[in-house]
Image (cartoon, rainbow, N blue to C red):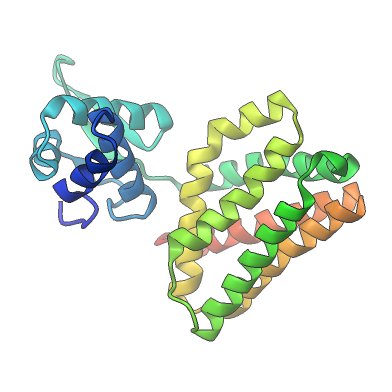
Length: 248
């Protein structure tokens, strides 16, 4: 456990702000952040006792947090022997699963983009445009070297943009389906951003930034098919970025 986020300081910082915060929730957020940021590597075994020692908490909130991560799909569990003991591992996603995830994203988010353009009065267009332009500016700044290559900041702008569109549909089934893959989408967004920044793929970074703006304009102008096509193109590019390198 060499990751800087896995430390007792993280727990103390939260408790200073809210002494009544449940320990298992704090541990969950710490571990979730470490997984999503790749500070805990895919396939890495989670040692409950070691994590508890580094966070200076008992094993119980750590187990509860890991159980939550299992529910979210970010940790997988393997039963040992007679089933009394379990081993926990950070999830690792195969090429086939990456492809399936992005197929699901295209189905859900392509439909969301279409519906948002068809009924764009439901969409907070000012906020959507602001998120698209901020993301585009950040991609340009990364390419120009005028901003730190913060994969979490970049991916969070990306995630907020997509989540706004999903919620704006007001379609409970689309929202529910997206919720089922949301953590995986967040993970892959971070990995895509990391792969493109570390790989110095400047052209792709600019394209991804521009695609958010294209989706926004199609929705604002009320062109459903154009919005769906722009979203599909964007998701295809993100999928290809990940599949080109299994280090992503």
